[in-house]
Image (cartoon, rainbow, N blue to C red; front, top):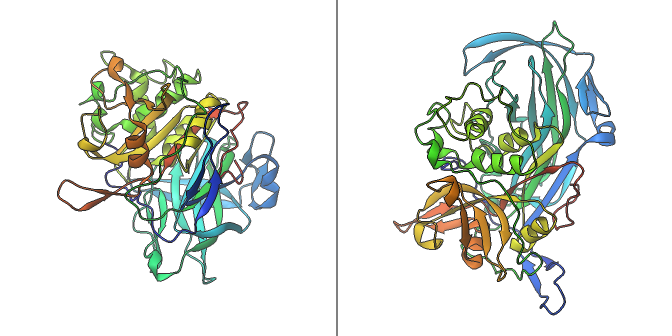
Length: 440
């Protein structure tokens, strides 16, 4: 499945953070849960463009645009062996304090990139020692694949930190040098002979410090028990063997299949013209399209987290981001608000009753909770669309999603996501007030 070669394991060193469980209905028990992870989301959009430094770019009502390019560059696309000159301009965020000492950071962005345009997102971190990282490329993005091949960049790092596809990570948190602050820099590119511009609607980052752990304390629940959202059901497995050039084919497409389910829940979908390239004999061509349009040419797969949220946000009126949540209590708040949540987890077959498989990394969609609090998930690793709906034990699901380590069948350890989610919704739908939302 999609995340087997990405660094998604969180690392140790968090300070305990006490949070109240969500408001429970009358008669239910409310408890205080102590969380040992720290998570924050910080972002820029709208009027916040004025807080950064622009060079050739302008903040408008629609978003950040490339107005007067500061120059041109020759971009040699490593994945298509083409060379092309592009006009460009930049926007750099203010130096932003995380608020705690972080060990990981994942950027995400929402943008419109019409033909002849693309963008690059970079990160420069400040360590707790006051020294800074190099400028790291966190993604080169276009919603199509006719101009550049969207890509992450390998072999980025210094002696303290590295970038693993989509995740900035401190190499050795035990050494005591962590991430204190950061800046983001976005470069917008366009054809020098055209005035068509990319439009950056938002950019931000999830910073976190999640301890190295096998287990987590169970959450209390009750806010969304008995609620199930009508999310379309798509199986990745019925696409097995289709378009192996996009990460190995449908059997590896858990991430775009999950993303596409949520996009279509909100009434958006690729048009017939968008999917006209798909073999007419294939069912659910929108899943094939989502796989192609999230494919990372460097990573060689469709599981790049921010590429999936950027794909979702390419549909009119949708916004999306990558973050972490503290517990299923917080997922319940999204379900109660009508927002399905895409979760990332890894597990052995024996650790999730009813799944029938094990995985080093897998995405699925939480669509609701049973009357007794168990998780209702649209699991794309199913033999048919009709079989996608699963009910998983709450205690088991929370462990495999929230932990950062798991024991393998051979007795070693594997990674876990530490609560990673994709959050996707229309702009007019409000985010629920949950912990870690410094600036949704």
